[in-house]
Length: 232
Image (cartoon, rainbow, N blue to C red; front, side, top):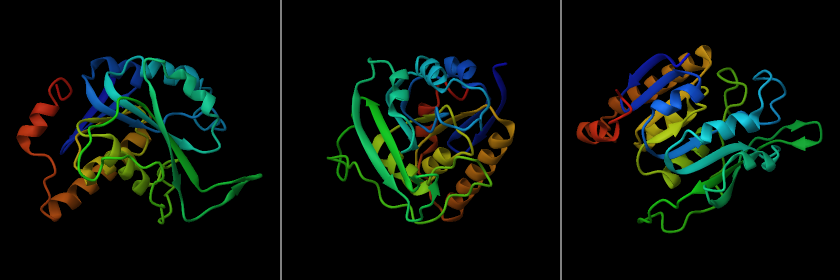
């Protein structure tokens, strides 16, 4: 199946296709920040073995670090899909101002787990916090059944990346939007054409906003250097 479609929007390269088939064509990246298919997805994504999918995807990734973002009712034993060659670094807690409930589970909290190597130390990032700012705006479920908060993802991108960010389970593109806002080169892969189109629109909108305000987070020279082997 491979790559069905490719879109380049500013500093973002987006691929429509199965990540297991697309990932071998992606060169090294700095960080993978992703919200993969969870083990408890209620059949939203069909009959998928989430553990096996994550394991196979991670085995195809060349990155300095991996950050997995998910809701706090997900079984962390799912993360045994990540090989021991990726050292565990820390777990992070991300709250929403608005809460709800599912049965006896009180919603309103996400978690993220970081693996690999620590990002370089620099002013404002000497010590990496484990608690994110509270997401005050609601997520829009019209775009995707399991959306993540933009503020939370921007916080992850800012703290855990310096170069290219890859999301092999892009969904509706929240990681890509965060990368545009923060100023990171982004590579996204999504298998569902509907979500891929939504991601393209959202990332294009974010990029247009950056142009409107005259921001240029990544220079042309930096983009050409970072996208060697990816934007081919």
